[in-house]
Image (cartoon, rainbow over all chains, first blue to last red; front, side):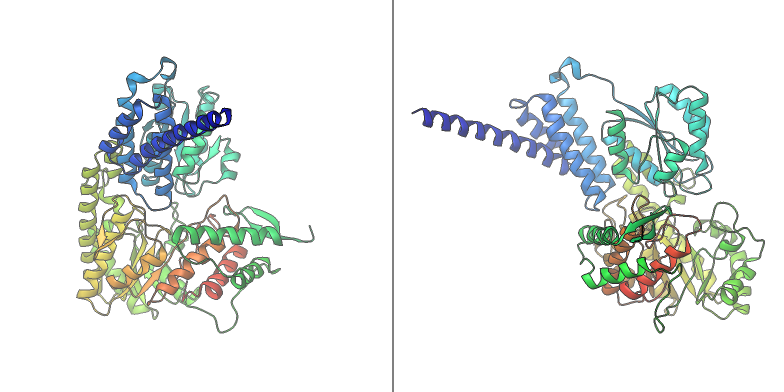
Length: 229
Length: 355
């Protein structure tokens, strides 16, 4: 009798676990589909079964991670990433009232730009987009941005991180100039620095005292999470 | 240390690795390309040969006699006179002199004339000057002389062009507007490239080099392929080189097509049939260097992608080799040990027809 009772409990637990996993998968799949209505339907279904933070972390965010992986592998493209991000935002908004008070912490703020003298925009724009879709508050100051613009925007937004892009060997020193300006302004200790762009490397990042180097947009998101979350 | 070999990181840094470490990196690099492109990994024999090339004790290596291949040049003569962050060495010389130096001094098998901006769009207002220079060069040179430039769709977006920047529109979730902007820019670039080459063909230009196709994503590829198609129809004998910007076509739009084929997410072996269909005579596959990985990893990855493209191609493949591409370190003056090893591997393992 005891054996039967114990087995029933185990079976019950298994059913519950499977259901939970299925809900995570439904939420994740809905994000990968890039369709807002599917995401909202999946959120509505999961709401009674899962806590709001659980829905976001293990369902929606997991789906965005999958979207990032598919983007990196050339299976999904920038518009899909944006559609998935918009759908995720709708899902998160739907859960706003269910969120515990303690979870309302401010998002990390990142200022992103390409250094002065360098007109390359696309790679940096993709990094901004991917950071934004990963939950960071991103201020993209564009390309050919003077050092003063980086500093002004960092002060204005109280940023935690600056992403500095340079696509030419001749403009690469501009990254060092931004770091030096941060030091002069007494901001270096509170602002993490990420560098990127074709000629930038790990060795260069170490040499100029950056906190990290990112090879591509996905790596930029991962490094930002490591440093800020 | 006796059993370690001198190799480089993707940023050019000198490091040493054991044979086992080199082979492990070769296997990993090839597997990465195979996984992404859904193509075969290099065979055991090919990996062994690649390891031998990398571990060669000589500083400079070369191909076996009989395996020499033609070398074409891009970036025009900017390599000589350019001094504004564009890979040039700042030697004052006219473009005619620069082209002739490549032909007679550097052994270039084909050469190209290029404008200092090296994008098609800025050539429009100076087309008369380009035609004049092309004519002078043609009268003084023997090797095929093409006109080269980048499609560079970026110049069609604000603040450089008439269409709103799709990157900004995307960030505002205006996806349809972003796509429309890319489509407009693509159509304008096709028209501009065709118009420029119509003029240059009148003064005896041998052909066109589309350099770094796809640098601005799938819209760039769309514009280039349709320009190739238009030029091939109008000039049956024009020589068209199609050189890519990266191993994967970045999907800024995601749904653009050429003759029914979606352009986003294509790998080199999928890009070449479309270039061929559009009318290209020669294809330049590209694989970008990862600066955080060793030259062994990068070269194996690059050779794997390039070999698949060569096998899928009916036209000659001249692989793009240089700073940060083709398994060569991302370094302004790429180290000769790395350049010659990568070049030998591309010829003897990937089977390229030229560089």
